Image (cartoon, rainbow, N blue to C red; front, side, top):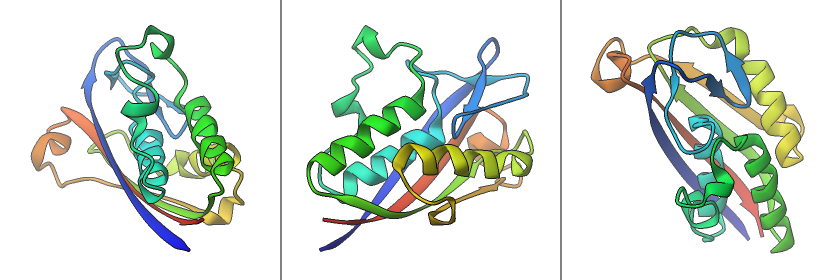
Length: 157
C-alpha cells in the first residue's frame, strides 16, 4: 500500500540560539527557540513520515516534557523515526519539503541538508527535495519572527 504524509512545524526566532536546519548550522544572528535544537525542517519531515503511517507525531514519540530531549540533535531523532517505521514494515520512497524564511539566504545550504536527511532516513539524495522561499516580508516569517517548514513523503507499507 502506498501512503502519503504531511508535516508542518514552526519555531520562533530568538537571539542566543544556533540556527539549525536540516542538520546544518547556518550563520545567522538568531536561532530557533525550542526544547530540542528546534530544527523545523527535520521536525516537519518526521511528522510527515509518522503521519503517512498513522503513527502519531514527534510530540508523541519525543515529548518536550521529557528532559532527555532537551537540546537533542533532530537528525538523531529522524534516524530513530526511520528505524521506528522500518520496524513496523514501512519504507520511505521520497521526501519533498520547503522552508519558509525571510532570512538568511538558504540556497547555499540545501544540498548539505538534503544529504543529511537522506543519510538519516536511508535514502539516495535524489529522493530528497528541499526548497526554500520567503513570504515577501508578509506574515510572521516575513517579519523574521520565526521560520516554518512543510514536508510531504511517500511511504510503502
